[in-house]
Length: 151
Image (cartoon, rainbow, N blue to C red; front, top):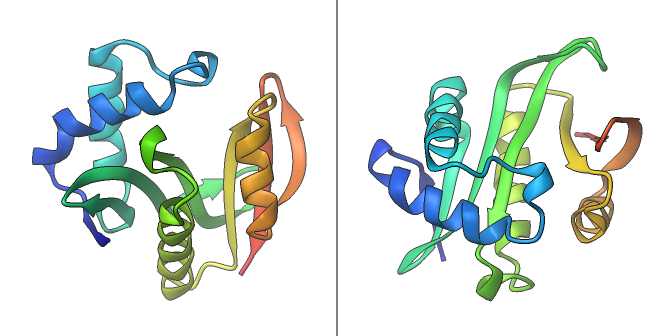
């Protein structure tokens, strides 16, 4: 597996994999191509060095870690995982774990003490994944649950 920084040329494959990865979880996702493309560009602009793609020949997963994010919930700048998804055919192979580990290392290198993320309240498999990685639930707000990890 090869992990590299995302480039603008990854836009179309991001859209395709995003839609595929969020099938069945649309209540937590952008659904229109235009919205997904705008989201991609926003992620790329927020922290380009923390926006990564995992490849097994072709791209199979993405993560976006924003180390410039101020969280009003924790009252500090931290490493915010805005996005992580893995192609359904490549789940449970350690790809998401490798991307998350790389993102946490990146946040640590940027001298962040915390990593945070929001996950869908009913996205039980994702919540379990994050708990196994040391994240704890802090608050819930609407359809979202906040999870944080000290690093």
